[in-house]
Each structure stands twice: as structure tokens, then as C-alpha cells.
Amino acid sequence: MPRNRTVATEESIRVLLDTDMGRIVAELYPTRAPATTANFLRYLDEGHYGAASIYRTMRPGAGARPNRVRVVQGGVDPSCRNPPLPSVPLESTDVTGLRHVDGTLSIARWEPETGASEFFIVIGDGAILDHGGDSKPDGQGFAAFGRIVEGMDIVRRINDASADAPTEHLHMEGQALTAPVALRMKRLP
Image 1 (cartoon, one colour):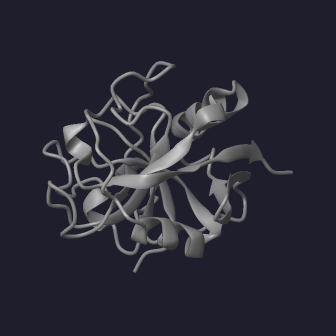
Image 2: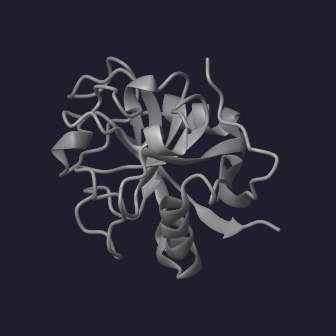
């Protein structure tokens, strides 16, 4: 299985996603996915993630809409339709070389150029989220831009949590965490 590894010459940026369940540390790849990484850091640095949470869990066979991957999703806009900042161009996996494997951090989207504030973490194999995968009708996949380097046990616990909260977002029926997990996010030295 392909792994996302930091290239020795590539600088990475670490970000803490602190939760009441424990620490999650992400390593971002600004050289491989510059626009997506800059977008995520802009949300962080400008304080837009001040009220961020992990609010969604996707598991195969769970929820009103069938899915085949395990992810947790967070950010500030569960509808994914009203981001505080403009969306960014899609940096697909065929361009970046990053893949949706266990621990990959990626930007959620509706259409290819609509990724903005919402992000997700992959648990296990997420190849259908890569360019050419069939998770979206357009086949473009999602923009991977980092990976979790600490706290995947926390991510898995969140993914296993109860998801029966009412939601006005049809795409999240049966996937909205009963108790969203608040995030306190910051860059690490």
C-alpha cells in the first residue's frame, strides 16, 4: 500500500488539533500541496478555526447514504456550502503524488474547485478518494495535503463514536456525531 511520506528535502509544518479526547498532530506538505496547505493555514492563522469541531463520522454501511470509506470530518461549516473564505483550486492526488491512506488529511468539497474550510482524516484505505476513484462523479478525487503523525488512536475513537444527532444537512444523516468534538488548533514549532 502506498504511504504518504515526507520527502527529505520537503519542509513540513506541524499543527496540533487538541481535543478533550487527546492530542492529534498533523504534518502538512506545503511543497506538494501548496494552495491547499496555504488555505488550511490561512483559516488557522486568521482564527476561523476558533470554533472548529469534528462533527461527522463516516463508516462503511452506516448512515442514510451508503459509503465505503472511514473518515472523520471537521471544520466550521458542516454544510460545506458557506465557507468564510474563498475556495481554492483542487490539487488532485495525480498532481501532488499524495494518496488517501490511513491518516491522510484532506479537504472536503462538493465540486472540483469548492474546497475551503472543511477537512477530513482518512482511516484505513481511502483509494476511492484519490484522482480516478469513484467517490465523486467527476473522478477528480480530493486534495490530500497532510497526514496525522500522532493521535490516530484518537481519530479512530472519534470515528467509532455515536452518530445519531439530528442534522439539517441531508448528506450527513446518520453521520452527525451525537457529541461533536471541539478542536483547539495551533501551529507547532
